[in-house]
Amino acid sequence: MDAVMIRPRKAVKAPACAAKPIPKIKQKTAGPTKLAKAETTALWHAVNWMATVLREWKLDGFKNDEDQAQHEVQSQHLTTAKRALSKMNKMRKEP
Image 1 (spheres, rainbow, N blue to C red):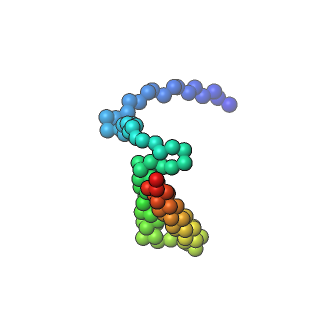
Image 2: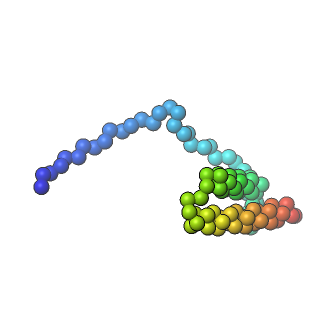
Image 3: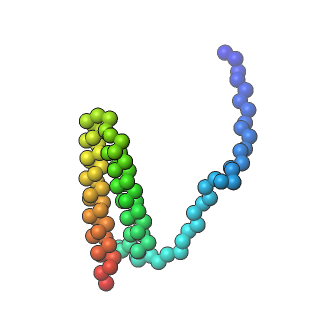
């Protein structure tokens, strides 16, 4: 068996259009038991993204029955997440 020499890779500089880190936003925290408005908003964005993914999945069509069953399970998770966020939003607004 012949020995193979491996050369180290050269460092590649990231292009100027590469994604830059997102700066941290100073925001109020609501404490350990409640969510701040920014945190609730971020969760709503995530839930809306999940809804978009499920909608596109349905529009693309299902590969088979198992794929459709998985879609139904994820749709139920989405419904549960929406309800939980609605409850959290009500709790956040309470004094």
